[in-house]
Length: 39
View 1 (cartoon, rainbow, N blue to C red):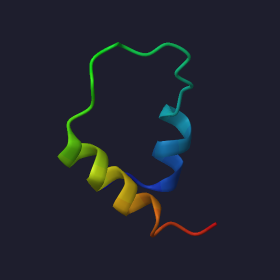
View 2 (cartoon, one colour; view 1 turned 90 degrees about the horizontal axis):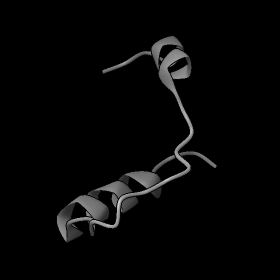
View 3 (cartoon, one colour; view 1 turned 60 degrees about the vertical axis):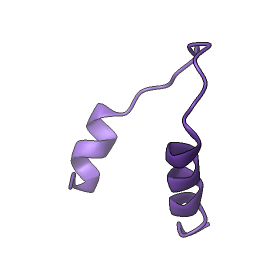
View 4 (cartoon, rainbow, N blue to C red; view 1 turned 180 degrees about the vertical axis):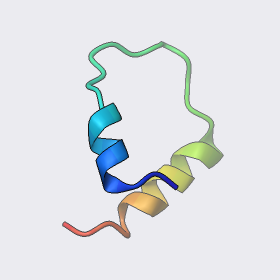
């Protein structure tokens, strides 16, 4: 797992996306992780 400093140094903004659909299982995992993060 990356530490906070590594994450901050390697972050970037995405301004363009591929037209490929995201697999439902991956999307579900991302959303489940997102609801557990602090606001």
